[in-house]
Amino acid sequence: MELTQEHFDRQIEALRADMVTKADLNSALETQTQEMKTYIHESFETQQNYIDERVQELSESTEIKNEVAQLKQDVSQIKTALHLT
Image (cartoon, rainbow, N blue to C red):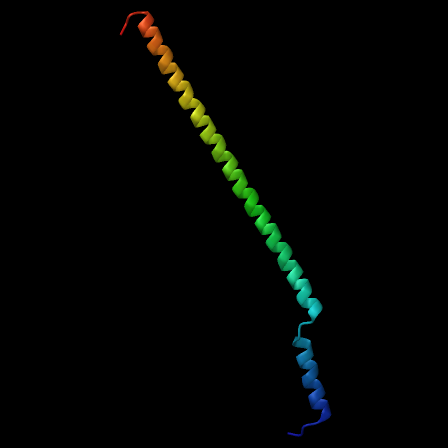
């Protein structure tokens, strides 16, 4: 096999075709960064929605407990007033 300048030129061109440029890397990095920002933002929104729903549930539960306690107190007062206890 004879090594010629043409052979080396073809090999170098083949290597260049496979190489990534700095601009390619910057573009890929920017795309990946934007995807990560979007993913993180969506994750925080999902988490915040869950927390908001849970706080609402707990708030409603606390209100119900307070109302039941008030009703028990009212029934107790009614029973006392009617001399049922």
